[in-house]
Image (tube, rainbow, N blue to C red; front, side, top):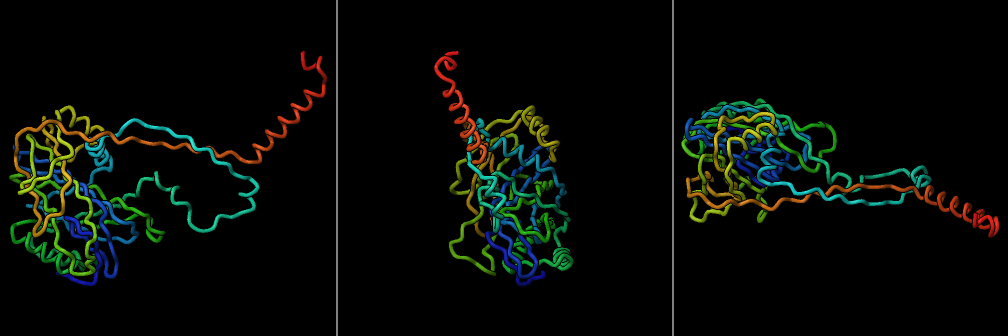
Length: 343
């Protein structure tokens, strides 16, 4: 395995392989597992949110068996988010700001823009190129060498332990937009859909501490895992977390989701149950398994209100002009005398 001085913080289930001397930070990780017991197959839909960077880097994603990789549209991820995190009604606000034409002509803006200008902008999406590397270590080594990426010793050991249990590896080159420009605050990784054979819903969510640049007490990235299958599921652990979403999905609901997403990368179309959890990053191999459980009452999060702010910029010079013209008309009206005012 090719090792080098690479920096990767906030570990996620996908092994982040940056170029030597670079740092790639994972902020969030969103996963949907679609398990079809009739075909004994599972589709993993995953998307990561990274700290902004403009340097290409790699992702190594382990799967229980050889997987077929497709890159669906970002619309798929939004359709899943709309189901798990329903949006509330739109609340509109109006903000009136006084500006000066003369001041804008006399002064030139220097430095960074105000922080609030980009708060409503969606983070840019990165492009990707995927390769199925299989179970052998040599293709992983060659892929890292070919693309100029590195991984830490703890990452290599974790992949070796999974491969020893028959797991396969899919490699993805993430290419951020705007190369050469200043990196954005947040970068949306590509939406990846990996379909493979499986006997149960399963996901490799853990990762060992990095052998390089370990920050004590650093927060782990948010891990949100949802499972869509024929029955209700629970995390197979001694202390299972409570789901934040659990509800029945009919075939019509799934078809509607596919319409919103412009197509679905899985073949599961019949009635099922969608269950979503927020879980802590497991230790060791960190393989999350989901066991069948009894049907639970529906659990739905409260809709998130949407605020749309409208800004109205009023020039001070225009306001003064209205005051002057109004004063002139008022004085002229009163100078005509009482009879004219009555008319």
